[in-house]
Amino acid sequence: MAVGMVEWITSDSLVEYDQAVAFMEDRAAAIAAGSAEECIWLVEHPPLYTAGTSARQEDLTDPQRFPVYQSKRGGQYTYHGPGQRVVYVMLDVGKRGHDVRRFVQQLETWVIAALDAFNIKGHIREGRVGVWVERPEKPRTISGGMAEDKIAAIGIRLRKWVSYHGISINVEPELEHFSGIVPCGITEYGVTSLVDLGLPVSMADVDVALKRSFAPIFEA
View 1 (spheres, rainbow, N blue to C red):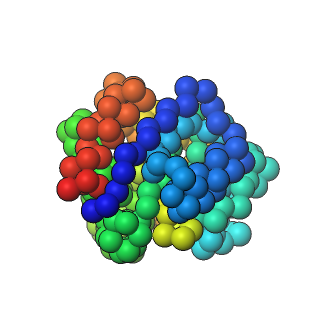
View 2: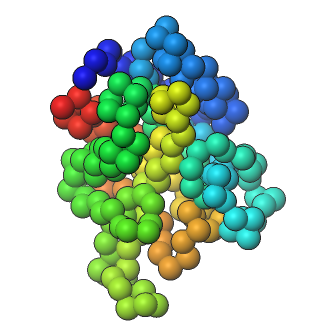
């Protein structure tokens, strides 16, 4: 693949959502024009909800709780906040095969590989976007299936074959903050985090796992 260097940026303080979107749009345009390197940006946001292009108004159950942003990414409502690693992925999908489905699968594989560093088995489920973990210690679902919780969300947009937006992994967010929305429109399953699963994992630990697992998936 004719791809260049990927710049990694880590923001140590909370980043406002509007600021992040402006940066991503500018960087994606520059990548498409050939004037900037691809970029992975690791951030945390103050508490907020975002509405993807498929969001349903009834899934915003507490609209006054946190700021709500209309997002151009795919998907429905999601929460961002402190303790959640948001990974903005600005990559040239055109130079990486012009295959959006494969690119999304790579993002899923990347999250699963990062979780595997902490002995957490992530799963992809048909009809449920994101990465899930099984919770055999919880009561089974209404439909009789094993209880599962969502640990990571995925939502991207492409502009001139350059991606932006990306993924979010729950490290140690306030899980009660998710109660103001129906996350991704799914009511039968819950939300969890690495710390909720009993792992004393830091944001820096997750960043290391993401960086280590990136090249084997995206540069193979």
